[in-house]
Length: 115
Image (cartoon, rainbow, N blue to C red; front, top):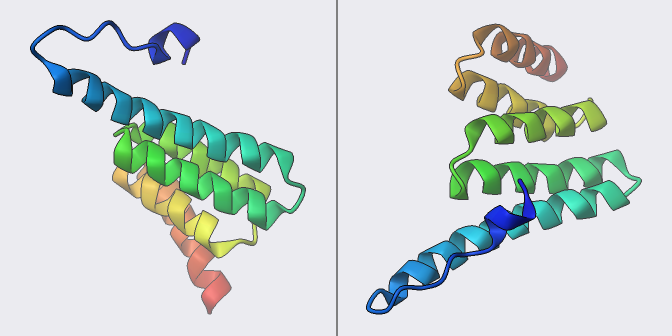
């Protein structure tokens, strides 16, 4: 996302809530970016993955960008391959995005780990 897309256009007179809605979306985008930036500064894989999961949930739930969230969940699972919440989030996102093969692989991995 480029910097210009984060700048809101001028608020039109007579429509004060328009700027508030844009501000909320921008704040969620900034929150997700902050989680990702903080994760990049940590050395502990589990802590990094936890922050990436927060970023992914914000991206998917608040910004409605499931494919970008999927990439964040993939990154979290790659950073902490033994951290089950990261694998589960990645599996669930793959399923929601109809990546059946990947979802099955990840669910099998979870099942084998919990067996």
